Image (cartoon, rainbow, N blue to C red; front, top):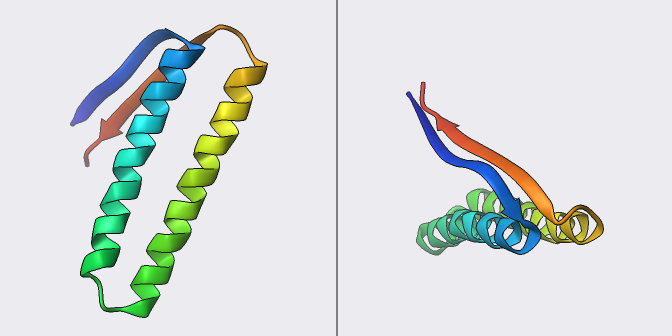
Length: 80
């Protein structure tokens, strides 16, 4: 099963907003799991994932500020 989430041209502000919000959802997911976890290994793993996601937001912000005014985005979820 394949679910198409994004496909199309967006200006840089719209692209940044969409990407940031999608990453924010994943960060909140990991934060929720951290709050309910009592295993230090799981907590550290999720904290590292959150840091990587935050770095991704920073990197995409830099990329979009340096590049064109129109960005093509494609995103889908593939369920196997």
